[in-house]
Image 1: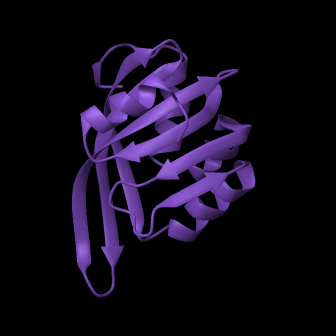
Image 2: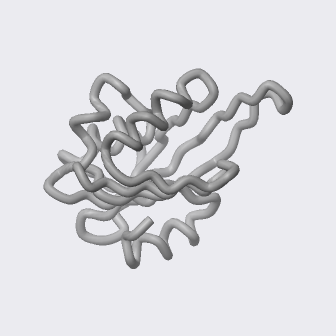
Length: 131
């Protein structure tokens, strides 16, 4: 993590999730993981379970890329991850956005996560970490 609160042992898990590190992603996901992708994703996606999340990351390779810039602890075991998302679509070209992820950990892995267009939205999700 380059800026923000030190995430300690959570840092590599958060980075693997945000940046879609396929080599490490499976081991960073809780078996009952739930992910809600709403920032700049149409239609909004609800992913439930490790396999669904892995399928989405596999299917989005090449058209979706995220970069983590910094993290900040929002609550115990709940982090806000600030970064950028690049989306490539044949009819719209490359789009680049700032995005904030709410990431809740359980047993040291990603349990709940959601993407948001604003920090305020991510902080609201962090108060009740359900995607």
